[in-house]
Length: 128
Image (cartoon, rainbow, N blue to C red; front, side, top):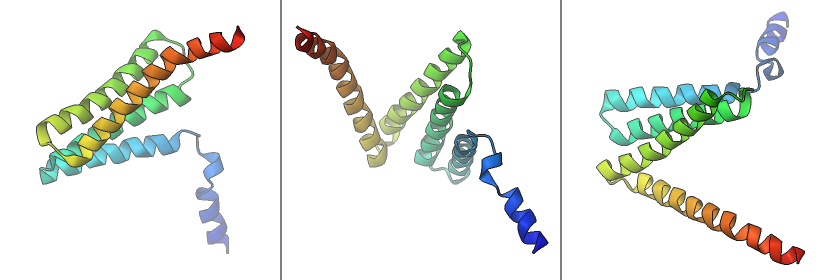
């Protein structure tokens, strides 16, 4: 019984910092890169690189409480490297998975720019 209590106490997730799942995903991305290198699988390497940079950007945005310019620059650079890695991976491998992800990213960017352009115009007309 005592061992069970000690085990549950060690696995109590409420005592861990809030950002630990993102750090675990970062480690998983790094392990995916290593797996891709050892097996020679380019798509696995690209997916691992994307995971590392994407979750680093998300972690910095969500959990690092700083307004320093270097932090902001690191967030943006990490996100851009992740997107660039997906597009580069599709260009060199022609993988269908990376192609679908690239297409999805381009659609999201197009939608974001259209909405950011049209939303102020719609709001100004509704106020008039």
